[in-house]
Image 1: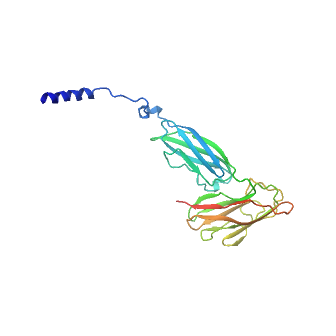
Image 2: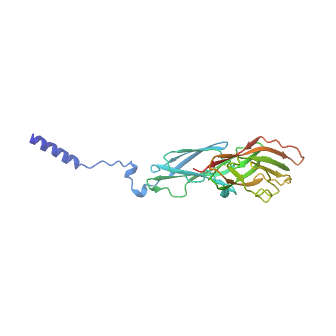
Length: 263
């Protein structure tokens, strides 16, 4: 019995002294100076006002964060829902909807533990051009606003060249937001006027465009105050557009603006 115990002890002793195998392919065995996360590929699919993205990273890219930048002169006055870095995630895909017309850049970065990928981050440019016919739209289609905060929205005319004048009515819930803009110029140096019909309706008037209309610029800039921290909507409820021959211009689409509460 004693001999057997000694024999087992010697086997364990010599076994423990053997050199351990190292898996050179394991990312955890790499030198720390080589443990640099890197995004290596980004793919995109644009469908109307929606965009899907997928990406891949190297062996050290274990978590990802992403964001979208939108290029417009008024972007600093509007709280876009996607222009901040996302939380870190192990997902390799993301999806955006209700994107406004215009040019964007999608960014994605990676990290491995506490080691973050260094700038410049992987990026790809894309364009949203979802409106194909004459249209009226609120910009932005969707924005986040906190309770009792002020915010801007803009009225755009899309895919109409010969426009001599217009009258557009906007409707909103006066229990949730209140119009605080000037009725004299709709917030822009233009001939547009924005009188209030009542507490929940505004009429935008401009009958002096006469060929000076630029579809890249808004017809009106409207400022509101938030009264309640609830989701609400600004609706294009009526409109009349005329060309230089004083003929009615048909409008195929209207796009309303959604105001989301800040979580």
